[in-house]
Amino acid sequence: MLLTRSIRRKMVAGLGVLLLMLGLLAIGSISGLSNYKRTVKDLELIEAAPRNSRLIGAVVKLIDPLHLEKFINDRPESTHEELYKWQRKEAEQALHETREVIEEHKQQLDLHFEGLSGQRFAPDNLNAQRESYSRLRAHINDILAKYEWSLDALEDPDKHDATSDYILSLVTELPAAIEELEELEPLENMHPRLKAAQRDYRAHLVLVWSTSLLVLSMFLFLSISAYRGIVKPIRALHRGASRVASGDYDYRVKLNTHDEISHLAVAFNHMTERFQSVTADLDKEVKQQSQQLVHSAKLAGVGFLAAGVAHEINNPLHAISTAAEGVQMRLAGLLKDANESDAEIVREYLKMMQSEASRCRKITEKLLDFARSKETERNQYDVTAIVREVVAMLNHVGKFRDRTITFDENAPHYAYVNGSEIKQVALNIIANALDATKSGGEVTIDIHELPDAVELTCKDNGCGMTPEVLEHLFEPFYTTKDTGKGTGLGLSISHRIVRDHNGVLEASSDGPGQGSKFLIRLPKSPRQAKAA
Ligand code: ADP
Image (cartoon, rainbow, N blue to C red; front, top):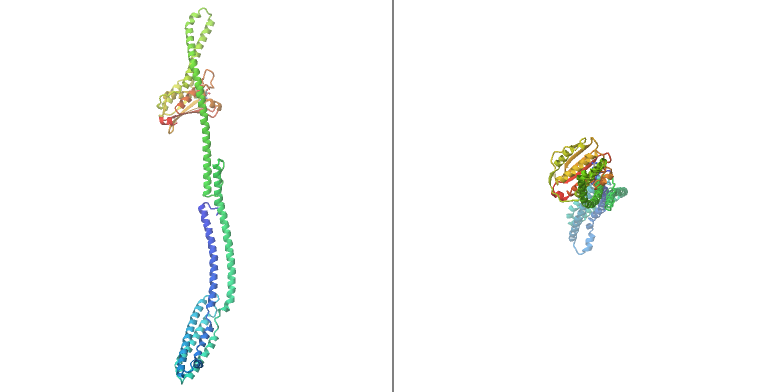
């Protein structure tokens, strides 16, 4: 039963065992009852057996009316004729009663023989006995007929005495004839019957005990199986549910009952695993969101400070640049008397002042751009077209000529954005990717459409990034490029733009030398832009 697979089959097997137990108990009880019934029947036969003594008693009663003295004593004043008449009446009455007894005896005999036939203890000479009794009955009836026939003569005073003697001789012969017959005495058979009943009793006692023991062991087996197969697994399941509910997500329910309960345990474990992974994902997401929040706060702080500084130094820079231009215009007159090498140095320094002042102004412009989180015009723009324009532009930049940009997308993908801002972002990311690759490097751009966003990826096989670079990537002024080559503002501005669009800008890399991947996700509609 323990090997059966489903609870339904286990229950069917359990019911089968229960039915077997009931069957065994029923067999024991029915066979005991039938044995008891047989013994009762035997006792009934003994009790109901007709007695020959009763027959003799009835026959002897026929003699009573023949004693004339009894009538004379009772009615001394009556005449002989009256006495004879009375005597005849009494004889008729006795005859009638005797016939009734004989009839009753016959019926008892019939029942007796009927009950005995087929019985274990029926005597062998049952038929012979039956015949002897019917012969005796015929003989008695014959004598009773003669008795009846002689009654007329009993009234006749002339024939009275002779008839009385005749009847007496007829009747007195009967008891002897009856006694000749073997008495139907079932008590003779009592001893073997008693022995057989004792044997039956012992056999049934053994039967009842063994069936009871068998039923008891079946019951124990059934109880243990039910405990192991149903109660224990359900307890294990309950324990597991309580442990998981109290926060122990590593707990797993182990069951090997191979039935619905173990299927339930597998499903429960699966659910716990899913729950565990969902919780871990949620934790990770919360961590990322918090990091992003901190990062955004940091960016906003730095942006605010940078914008302030930029604003403050913008005017002095303008003054330096204008002053340098003014000095340059007057330079020819001023350097008339100076020697050539000094004049050359002054010219060079002036140029440097102008170019560095202009570089500084570009930086301050960018900084102001970064801090200026303004509400710009948004519309449905084809991201494919924007990227295609940027790629075409970069293909013409001399220093990137020996790199390959792969962009095979032709289908339009519309996003709800500010076109020029997204162009700036795309330019930044693709230019950075080209910068990161050496001669012969490759940059691959893809666009995917999601249900509620357009996703742009830019992959390169360039220098890749360390976890440290990835951590500071979007911070203003963070750059790994040589001084003068990079400002470290491109990605922070791009990040701000994408965030203002309620989009996502993410970077990933498997490490130095493994290339990098940038992902930009932009909302498709104003509703999604707001919902994001
Ligand atoms: P800049 O390009 O002026 O340095 P950015 O903000 O655009 O400033 O970039 C910041 C830094 O991010 C870069 O100096 C570079 O180290 C890193 N970076 C950006 N894009 C990539 C890329 N595709 N591969 C490797 N490093 C990159």
